[in-house]
Length: 116
Image (tube, rainbow, N blue to C red):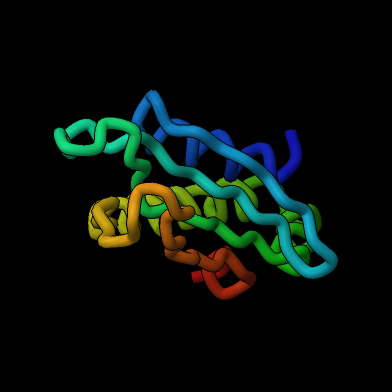
């Protein structure tokens, strides 16, 4: 399983079960966007949460690929901890009109996150 797939798995596990995901692979980074319907907005039942855009640098992906087994596992735990920390502080609510795309909050996973 690639590093992108492992991060994707951690993110999907941490998000609400009804979250919607899409991925973008750019020249410098891999992005995973997640958003979900906000259940507690009665006046607008189709309103989506603020999006989370997890940016995984290709540099981090290359570094991860060269790690030894125990170092790779430690890096996976650091990424999971980073995501859990961010999710615990994340507020999905926003004030954009319902007919516009919700704003996104960007979380960057780079070599520094991998190595602590």
